[in-house]
Image (cartoon, rainbow, N blue to C red; front, side, top):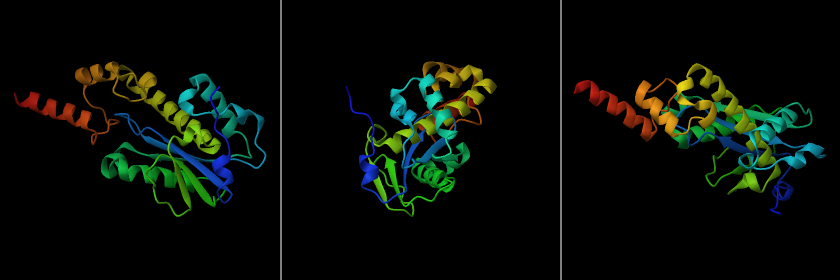
Length: 211
């Protein structure tokens, strides 16, 4: 049986420790979401089910999300970067902004941060970056659930508006259904125009109009 996330890294940092993760770096459409979570000293029993959000079913993620955000002992912050901001700042600028916003919306001030990944966003807290941290740190894994479910629910709303792109299923990634819809219907205001695949679709449309 594979090891689940635990509090090993948290125990080495100055408390309170916020774990941070993001959802939405790779998709062609939709906002970028980051989440920050500070777990209490006494961990609720249901947190034992927490794991890297990618390893959980959608039903399980949704259940854990609702339990986490309704538990008054768990501090949760969410940071959202719009498509317009992402196109202006590019990912290298948008990701630190999302993390900073997530920390700023916590109802408790952290003393230190654990962040999934290898690129330090350089926030004004002692920070430890952990590659595949959502599989190792319990607070990062909890944040991964918050970020993933928050973004999925936002993409579900966009799916209702633009059903042809399949965002309720592909979350904005470049699946065949998404690509086919781009070919037929073009780029929407929710597409990331700074991303190379979307740039190509825009250029193709311009060239076609000139032919």
